[in-house]
Image (cartoon, rainbow, N blue to C red; front, side):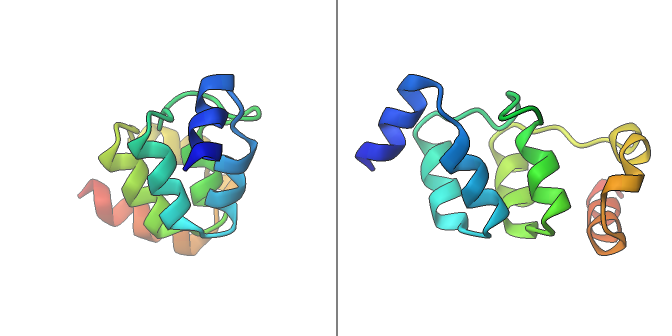
Length: 95
C-alpha cells in the first residue's frame, strides 16, 4: 500500500503497468482505488492498451469501471496490435 501511494504521488506508473501486464489485478485495483488514472498515458500508452495487448480481461473491466473509455473507433485503429480473443471480448462489451 505504501509503495502504491508513493508511486502515485511521484507519477511512477511502471509497477502499475507491470501489474496490468502480469495479470495482477488485485494490485491494479489498489492503484486505481488510490487514485491512479485509468485514462492517463503510462510509459507511452494508455493503461487500456496494456490490458488489451496482454489479454487481461479483468484489468479491462477494472479500467472501464474507473473511467477508461472504450469505443469502436479505438478498436478499429488498433486492430493490428490486439489479439483476436481480446477484440472479440471488447466488441461484446460495446453491444
